[in-house]
Length: 101
Image 1 (tube, one colour):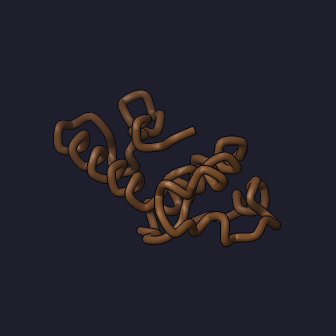
Image 2 (cartoon, one colour):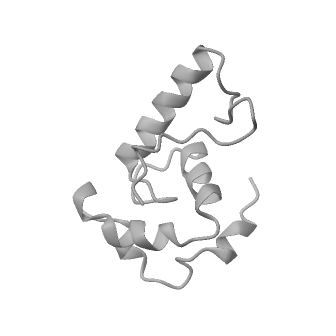
């Protein structure tokens, strides 16, 4: 998987500890950085594709990423998306209630 996006990320050079909060409720600082990031989508897809189990990636905690994965599976089973989680229009299907901004 291409990782050129990492060099354009808003978190580049920041202390990574903020992206590994002890609880989901403490993830606001990391999510604020992600909300301004030009590669938020690529980061989220990387985390989902590589089953990252820890930290905030692309503005989503592990619990939120699991919700996105489950939603995509349900939609795929219903014929609404392809294997990458993209809908019929090619746009990523992200559970908006799962990713806080």
